[in-house]
Length: 299
Length: 304
Image 1: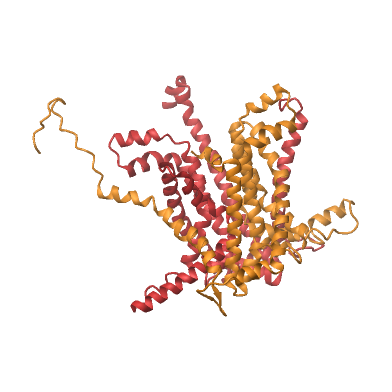
Image 2: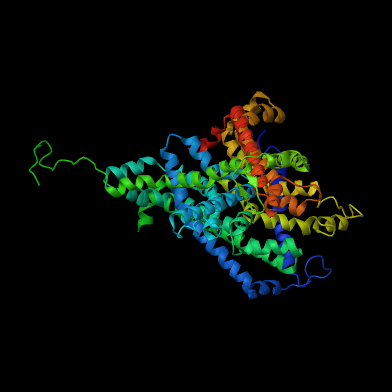
């Protein structure tokens, strides 16, 4: 039976798909809706306001936490993407594919609380070891190496984000023809030239999406950062401690919505950008596909 | 430069053998960086949990030694019971997610044009990209006594009294897990359905197999590795993400992740490590069984 034999069944399936997406998004949209209410959650009367957002941006502690979040996201992205690229290249070249892919994808299967607990104890022990070593050698420069702080959070976030970046980059690399690199090498390009001038432009969309994923994941992350961060606070850790300690306030609705808005804006931007790009690429490819129109396109 | 001895190339200089420069030779090692990083900061800490779990507990930390006190503390207390019941509820979440999510993956592969398939799956990335913690917290105003669901049902006249079983119960935990992790079964199912070519549906039609037989005898065996990976993912997150029972669960809703987090708060680090080690063993066991049953490397086929 093909899909159009019973058009209503086909439509019902589409409706179900969209219903599921809507259901998944409803809590987020509902929180956004509440966040613009002057009277907060459960009020009988809905009065539109942006006051709660104003409060966030006026709060120095929150703005400071937001700065920490953004620097964490930036540093993690800058480190994760090249590593994921190297790992993807390594995976393509190596014969021992299963151990490599296991090592890179396993963090997906380890629950956040478990991974961060393991890392927390690991870093604490490492810190004690470094201090002890330093005492034995009479030097103190190693004392801060494994202290909980920015570095340890970045390490935790890299381990969290690298599987996603790796998979996205690997999938885009799958469409790349390796013969092009061979041709470039045969023409005398170094390995780096061949990568940067030939391969990278073709996998660029994947790399960009991987960047966006990493930024969003870091921006959203709570468990790993909260256990590994040491002294400072990020936006989500402030938010969660507020919500756990004093319940949902009007401001926490606004903060939650703010985080969701950022993520949705980023992912929406990427989708629009990719669609525009693929359309532009299709327009460029058309004269090649239909040679008759080429001269007019060139002119 | 010496005169060319070989005249067979019309006087062109001989080709020098290719010698990689120092930079090129060094750059080969760069490819090992991610591997070394993952071994050092992922595999090693996870393996060390076993070692740290047998250390002696001190007031604020632990010291090297060998004791099974942490395991005793886990296996001979209410913790084991909680852990096992969280496994049960996690299993329910897996089944519910599969029933709700997998048909979507089949539908997208079967009925959506090839070029649009990825875009449709992208729809499910959207909820996943909103912070998990915020989605879980957002369920509170939705499921509460005077929340969205109850208000809607009362306004529609379907119920008279608000349903209180939706939150701060095990039901709340299952709802939270399904809504958090269902996109994964859609992704995993979508990848798994790569192993089920479109013509298979036509073949089934021609041979007269109904939808049920088509599903149990054809789709399920072919897509099994991917389905299994998605199911394991949901299962381990169900027993590992502490925030879901913490925020949506009531009394007795405690999973492995929450036990570990509470142990850290109580400065009982060996116990936290023991829980981590047990979770690792569970995961490894599941992956091993899955690998023996369906050869999980098949999932990687689309990536090669």
